[in-house]
Image (cartoon, rainbow, N blue to C red; front, side, top):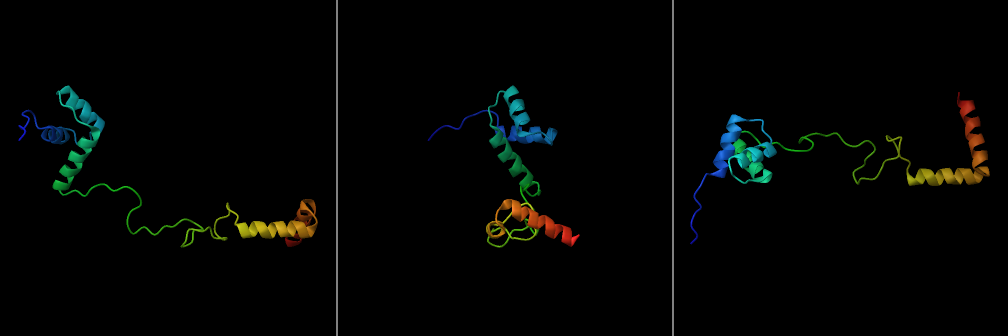
Amino acid sequence: MAKKKSGPNKSQEIRDYYDANPNAKPKEVVAAMEEKGLTVSPTFVSTIRSKQLARDGQPPKRRGRPKGSTKKKVGATRRGAAATTGNQDSVSLSSLKKAKEFIDSAGGIEKARATIEAIDQLSD
């Protein structure tokens, strides 16, 4: 069986540092530990910090949208396809096909534009 290394307890040193500096970032703690002659990684520091907070009764900080938030993307449907209403920036494939059919039936893009302008003037 291997002998246990004797020396300072890194975890306790990190906890002590956080007690003195509660808002310290992991990189700051790593730098402070290096000054004491201890080699630790920012990941190890974060692990010790999260366990300390859990032991103190504070819930871990979670990333992302909070639970229960019901805000959805505009124009999104259940299966992720873009809806034809709601999102004015995107054009559906079916709308493009219908526009092409209109241009072809009008006799070209210039005649289609003239037709749209005439309809626009009638609706004003």
